[in-house]
Structures are given as C-alpha cells and as structure tokens.
Image (cartoon, rainbow over the protein chains, first blue to last red):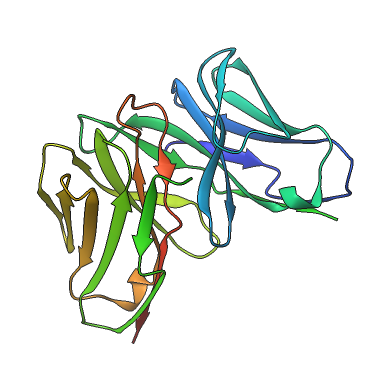
Length: 116
Length: 112
C-alpha cells in the first residue's frame, strides 16, 4: 500500500461542466500519474508529474489539464466534460519496489466518472 | 499506438491448470512489468523483468523476456479461482523510466 487515495470515488456530471479529480499520496513520492481505463484500451496515460509544478503530457492529454502545487496532491481537471471522457480514472505513483533496481507503479483505487 | 499488446484477450481455464499470457512490444525497453487487476480495483504490481534478464520467478509466476522478438510471457502455474483477474504488461519506452505504457490486457477466468 503506497498510501494513495483518490477523491471522489464516483461522480456523475453533465456535459460541459468542469470536473476536478484529486489524487493524494502520503509517502512523498516524486512521480505521479493519471491514467484512464476504458474497455479494449487498457490503461492510457493522460498526464504525469515529476515534481511540484513539473508536469508532462501522456498519450491522451487533449481535454485534460493537471496541477501539482504540493508533493502530495496531483489534480486532474476536465475543463468542460464530454461524454467521451466517461471512464475510470486511476492515479499512480512510481517508487522502487521489491526488484530494487527499477521503479514500479502503485495505483490508487480509481474514480468512476460518468458524463451525461 | 500502444507499446504493449497482450495475447490472448481472454483466457478461460480450469483450476489447477497453467495459464500463459503473452505480451509483444514495439520499441527497446529498460524493463517490462506485469500487473494484475481484480474487477473494480486498481492495478497491483506482480513482477518486473529487466531487459538484460531472460527469466524471472516469483512464487507461482514465471516471466520470460525475449528482447530479440520483443515479447514476454507470463506463466501462472497451478491456477486458482483467486487468480481470476485481468493481467497487463507494461513497458517503458527505453529512453527513460518516467513513462510506463500499458497494453490492453488479458482477462483470465479460472473455473473452480
């Protein structure tokens, strides 16, 4: 358990409304990630962060923005939600696990977002 | 396009049998990782194999890596009903450890 929580866990919203998802970690890890998971696509990287105020785009970043003003919090914002953004969103951190030599990812419990 | 692709997409076996899942990827890598996801939950890291390793074991899991063919396999021996889950391979792009790209996954059903 890497001490990762996500909020909210479930959200239903209307098309065109802004939505912010929060990822919180308690272990001071440098790298944090946002993924979305859809049937047939596995997990796709939206954005990631390598430090406070340092972020970069992933493979499906259009329509999403992120912010990281504190090490422990990584926020994902949908400025104007669309139905195509209905998905399950996972936050992850990267840390050295049992292999010791290379970083591994540890995931939060996910947020199920429905955009009507 | 995705870096990793698992095969088969779905697999159904009887309890006690072995389950084999394959992963192919496109670019050079530093390492390849396998994750498990139980229904409705987040992913859990299973095992990591580095590009200079050919085989790795962890309990009932055996992972092989063939960098010449850009492929990996995950073998679960003596499967149990509790192994029912989706399994994902994940790779970096070889240039850095920062970004990890996941395949679409294999859905494994173990029938008691």
